[in-house]
Length: 255
Image (cartoon, rainbow, N blue to C red; front, side, top):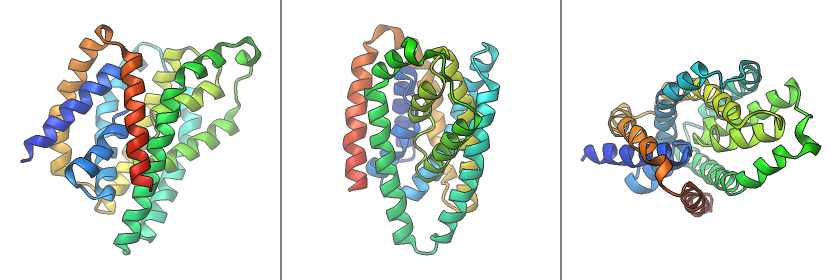
C-alpha cells in the first residue's frame, strides 16, 4: 500500500501550495497518527523531505531578491550548531527506545501547538510589525542567533517550526522588513537546517527512504496544483481551520 504515502504527499503538498503552511506541521503528525510511523522515524524522514521540497522555493525567492542573506546567516549561525547539539542529545537516549519515542512525541505536540498559535495570530503580528512605534527598531545579530538556536533545536527534535514559527520570530526581530523578504529569508534558512538535521537523523537510523520517495512522488505535483488554486479560495478560513486542527493534534500528542 505504498501508493497511499503518495496520496498523503499529494494532499499535504496541495495544502502547502494553497496556504503556505509548512509541510512539517502537516506531514509529521499525518505519518504518526495516520500511518502509524514511529515518531522518531516520521521526524527524520520529514526533515529530509522538507530539505528537498523547500529547495525549489528557496531558489525562486533568491532569484527574486527576497532573501536577506545576512539575517539568514545569523539564523544559521545559531540553528546549525543547535541542531548538532540536539542530535547528540538524541543519540544519547537512542538506546532507550521507549524514552526516545516519548521525548520526540511530546516535543512534536508542543511544536504543533506553538505553530497553531503563530498561524492564528499572524494577522495581529503583521499589524504590530507595521506600527510606527516598532518599525525602526530591528534586532541585532545576537538576538537573531539566539532565535536561530531555539528554532534549530525545535526543528531537529520535531521537524516542526522552521516555517510558521521562524516567520513569526522574524516579524518581531525585523519589524521594518517586507513580508516577501521575511518569507524568503525564512525558507532559505530552513533548507540547510532541515538538511543537516535530516542527515543527522539518517546517521541515527531514523529515516525511511522508501516512505521518503513515495511522499515526494505525490507532494511535488501537489504543491504545483495548490499554488495554481491559491488565489481562488479563502486562504484566511483555510489557515484558521488548519491552525485549529494542528492545535488539537498537538495537544493529543503532547498529552
